[in-house]
Image 1 (cartoon, one colour):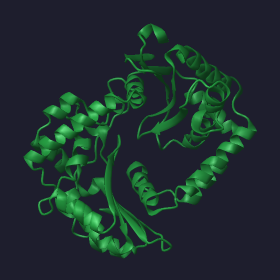
Image 2 (cartoon, one colour):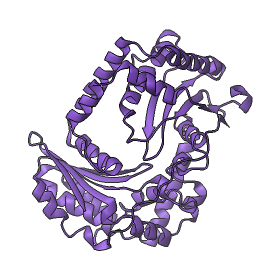
Image 3 (cartoon, one colour):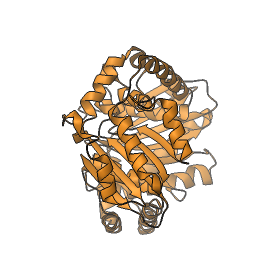
Length: 401
């Protein structure tokens, strides 16, 4: 069992999390959405604590408890006053290791997730990102919706979910992380003996995508806006070029001073929301641009995105853009460490992704060392490759041909 903490004696809170190194990509097709289903069910109660008792106990301490499912990990956490550290560790251990899986609660939560899937389908600004992932990684779990599908969620049995939990929620696949006004030994004492009874268990087996991306994906919807996502395959989260990729993303569409934000929103008023982001995983990654615009202006927005990408490929970025992006990345990294929750999340995601926590100074040094040549190399590794265009709105396939 791995336990990682970060002491913050200047605060009065503590955030404790349990991260499981299993996520949406680690499920067989027939169990797509199992990790997310588990995320819901673990809050429905344990063998000794019903769901209402868990909620009341957290509320009575002024705390909060939540969870989320990603493609390569699932996280459960609680934020409490520092004096309630022992309670938080005990509660998380109970929730993660001995969920009740009562059949009636499985069925009621199934309906909640089916409603969540319907909500996701009704939000085209969100749905277009899944559509883009499906086209970037066709037939691969990385392209699959983390929630699963209505068919898989409806068909999943209580015993299948419990077996998935038993196979993956083992000590070798879990890490307990905590940040705040705490002592590491106190956390270890609280964890000791609570997570170690399930055996070691194998880590998830993952394989990289082997099929190339699809060029176009269109979903017709009678919406007021057309939602556009343009994606390129990138590299994995261990790649040294992840730092210059962050700079490229910041210059392209990562902030208010980015090229796409200034050109499409500020100068031309073609979109309220326009941005870019990266998504890096154990063996693959992506860079994606998003914009929402009136259907009649979709072709113009698409042309502007393509033109900006072509200019970056031809001329690179400027020294001024590099300096602004580096300053933003350094500053946002430091500002993101102001509370115990964000520090806990950094510990958990780092341990699941890399098996170590990269010191903040190491991050800052790597960002500060980026050169224009580094960014040029990444431009040609990523943006020079084939792109995938995904769109949702009152469109047909010919609109993006």
